[in-house]
Length: 238
Image (cartoon, rainbow, N blue to C red; front, top):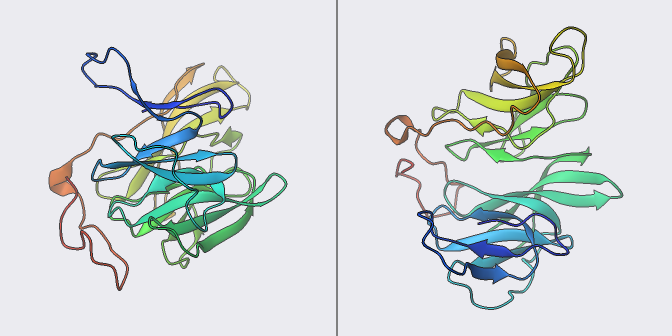
């Protein structure tokens, strides 16, 4: 699935083995496409609204009710979508909306960037806070806390990747301090409980970008499902 610039990029699906002669067009315009965990639907954003489309393509869907913003990310249980909720000029809230549409829940407010990322269990969301730091908040809005920072390091996106056990994140950071690593991207790891320090894994290159943690389904935590929901509460991630 891909899609970058809203005005001229499509959201399309192609086979991973390279055998697709003509990709299937899911949406004529859109950005930030993301698969539902069960693989049957795709969420994306276009002109300040979120949309959900069947993976087989079924025409242009209506905007998702209650979801004005961008950067949609499905929860591991497939029931919720975290997103950057438009709050004003160059201002966003971290919101969660039911995948079926409805009233969104605001977890944090007044941010310039969001880059949301669900924990493997679906009980927490990491996001870009004010200042130069990542933060983690429980999916019900409590327990919001900052993660360690490094001097002269900016966590400039994209969204961080969680370790399978949910105890750490890996992320791309831009270092603008002094020394040989000045003005370079690096890869860093932090504990999600806010303890310790940000640890550099690789530094000193121009294009260390978008790190991703290798999945380990056997050690993944149980998927958290909010009270009153019904899907996937007792099944480990696959």
